[in-house]
Structures are given as C-alpha cells and as structure tokens.
Image (cartoon, rainbow, N blue to C red; front, side, top):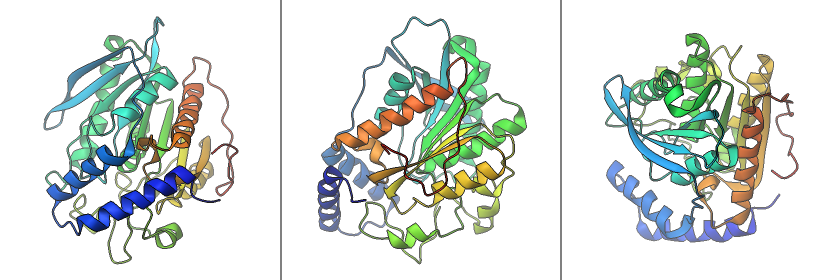
Length: 327
C-alpha cells in the first residue's frame, strides 16, 4: 500500500515545519511543539455529544482531573469506556485528545471517562499507571451515577494510552473488575523490544525511532522495569483478559507491536481482532485533515460498540499480518 494521499500531504507539512523549528531538548519545548503542530495541521473532528462534565477522580496521590462525555440518548443504561490519551507518557491531556473521547462516545454510544493521569518525567512510572487503574476502580464504584452497565465497561487508549489501557486490563482481571473489551490504538506493548518496523520506519514518518534511543525515556527510571507487565503488557500472563481490538497503522514505526500483541492474546485464548490501518500514520485518530482517517476511526468505534452491545457478538482472530478490508 501507499501512504494515503491526504496523509502524504500532511506528512510533508509536518516534516517541513519540524525541520524549520530545529532541535528541541526540553520536555516543556516538546510539549509546546506538539500542541502547536496539532493546532496548525491536524484539524481533529469534534463530534457532538449529549453532555460534557468536568470532574475529579480519587487517585492514589490526590484528585485526578477527568472529563465525562455522555451520548445524546434516552437509554436507561449505557456502556462505559475509560479513555487514556497518548503522548509518550510525557505529554497530552484532556484537551489534546478531546476528539478521541467524543468519537468513542458518539460512535460507540457509550459514556466515556477521559482522565488526565500524571505525566513523566515529573511523575515517572508507576504514577500514571496507578492513576489509570484508580480511574477504572472509580468507574466501577460510580457506575450508577454514570448511568452505566457494570457488565459493559471497556478500556481504550492510543499510543502510550493504549499501553496503559492494556496494562490496566491485566490488572482488572487480577482485581476481578469486570471488563468487557479493550480498544488499543497503535500501542507499544514492549518497551524493551525493537520490532522491525521501528527500523523500517525510523525516520520521516511523524514519530522518530532512532536506533540509539530507548522507548519510555523519562517514564522509566529503571530500564529493568521493561520486563514488568505494567510497563510491557506482552510480558504478562494474558489468560482471561478482556477481548481486544488491537490496531496498528501501516506507516507507523510502532506498527509491529500490534500483530505481536494480537498473536500473544490469541495464544492465550483471548478473542482478538487485529486491524492494520492501511496508508495511515501514527496518531491518525487526531488527523481529521485526512478524511479517511476519520472513516477508519469510526469503523473501529463501530466494532467497539458491537463488543459492548447487551448481547455480545463473537470475535474472530485475524492472522497478524492480514490486511482487513477497509482498514
């Protein structure tokens, strides 16, 4: 496949802008740069929802800012999705991923709770992970207030948020917190493994993967933690975790993490759908300037809605490198 035509135009603009901006060596500068880039070029699609409410969630080290999105529906009870934003564990927040939460809310017909978990390097692992797990517990403790069905709770996240969602799903199984589904979007599943796509697409495809740079810099104070399932979910015993949609993007350096995790889930007997979004870049859910990105994101939300239906439909495993029609 080729890079989607609109994605190719966007990528040229991003590469030119980034080159002109010059090297960035501080976390504050990196955070500012990605938000400027997002505002200038991404044009995320902000779908209408029924209601938005800012709240706080009780966390292990204090209140965690969160935002609740409710669909425009009269249904008595709804599925509920914990959404965890991406940003390399060091950036991003409620505003940067507003479009993601709204899309899941609208297309999956679910209440969405998005949380502003603590970021590294100010708060290295396990701070962010602990906040995300506390947020899932909060959802179950407040399911009546949310208007949710306790048997239809899911976790979802993109990039670093997908990593956190997968790790939380493991913890949910161990803590006997009911979890119906996972939606994992271009998520790194092992911070100590360099998959082939990370070399094949190391430069020039929006995110860079230099051979001499380790994943999770700033997030992990101790590299031995890459073997911890809370950091690298693929290292865990995956038996009995929630069924999953595992999505990669064809032109993403992290692409090969998706089939690796799908294969590991399938080997553990977990129902899984593998989706490799053809022609897409890492982070494409934010890139509304490419209409096909929105279409693909909508399709994944529709699949999540199917998994969260009152009568759950069966899931079918796809071979790791199969390109599924339409993705």
